[in-house]
Length: 133
Picture (cartoon, rainbow, N blue to C red):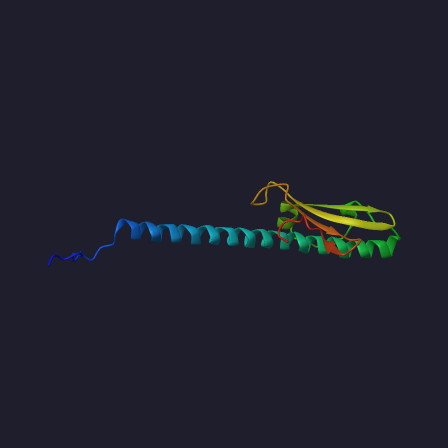
């Protein structure tokens, strides 16, 4: 009787190797996506910390002078220089109302300039278009 299946050596077929390579590529794509979101949220956390400092300083300024300021230099903010180098902070307010505080990344930020983290002070929430949220 003729054997339908012959014994083969201990190696892998090309199809088996290709299946493994495809599985590894899929897992790598998922891992890169998760890592990218993690890095973005870490960068946003630094901006959120800076915004929280601006918000606290604005409250102190308002209690002292009876008005909010749009000039960051008027506020006494204790932030390290590297944070200030990576984020440009902006306050949108009128003398009687604090509206938004925006942190925009500069060219010194890894990941690029122009990324924004926005805090809406009127409702006390981060806006949906803030990155890393």
